Picture 1 (spheres, rainbow, N blue to C red):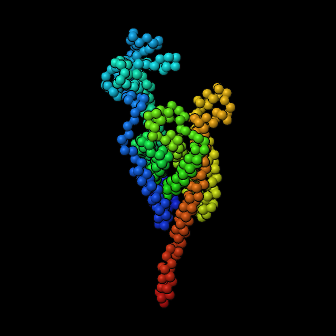
Picture 2: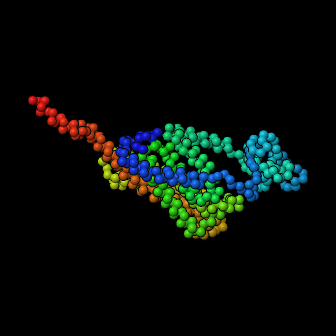
Picture 3: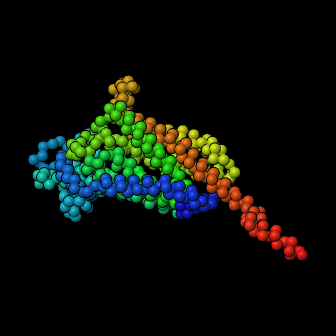
Length: 418
């Protein structure tokens, strides 16, 4: 696992010595083993059967052809139907009539719109299909393509690894994380296993298989442990229930085995992982560059200088993280403002307080990640820089390359002159 084997920019500090590679391997082996054991132990078996309101409803996509009035036997003001072409889902391909929402706040549906329709087999004939939402697949696909092109244009080959890492993370969450939590596995254990599995693949895939990525991963792991521990404490001290929105309440009704408080913790761990990746990678690369510029610098000097960068990074990243969580509750905060609730009462409401906890606990994880990652990187990069400096001095002074050869030359000199 020597430096310089990444698929992107090569490290200028040269290959790692064998003893350092062995040490890193000993640190990584337990993490890899624990991750594999966690995946095997928690992997969903697929036998879960869910029953409850709404679970028997099927969904598909359709294109609106025409808006028509409801039958005369439906005496509801504003009732309208859409004659649609079913594109996917139950009954497709075919034509059907779908009930449209009505009322002052109902969305406007016009011919040509792509919509999502729900299908309830038990409903009366002619009322089985109903509008559920607009189909936003095509614009989302266009935006995704633009995003991928932008990443590749800026990052070139390294961007391919980043996009592959993103795809891997989403697939892992879809096939492992969500089903495992739905089957009743401890959400925190599932989230930690997911985070470890994502780290082991995405950091190396995005940034190269070298010591820098390994150092960043170790720093990220320490920060995730901090986040999980502090989050566990404060979700209990704060008496969080997890029943904060309609989605959580619906899950509790159809899957009582799901630990909603643990689900809050799981979201906290996985949500912080992306930010931690950015912080630890940046700090590690900063230390490597400092060591490259000054190969004779001590580990302490590298740590002190890199922490100046880290402090600025923490200030901006924590602010970004907290504002992201605050933005998630902005509409609700407007409701509290309209009700003239005092700030201390509004922020104590669970739906707001959980975002506060997420932001602050995530910030503490970032604060822990910076010095830990910087310290490990300073030790490793300092050692590599000193080794490279010694090799360079040896190359400039041939007499220091092989002392035994120098002794042989000194012994053979006089006999040759004789």
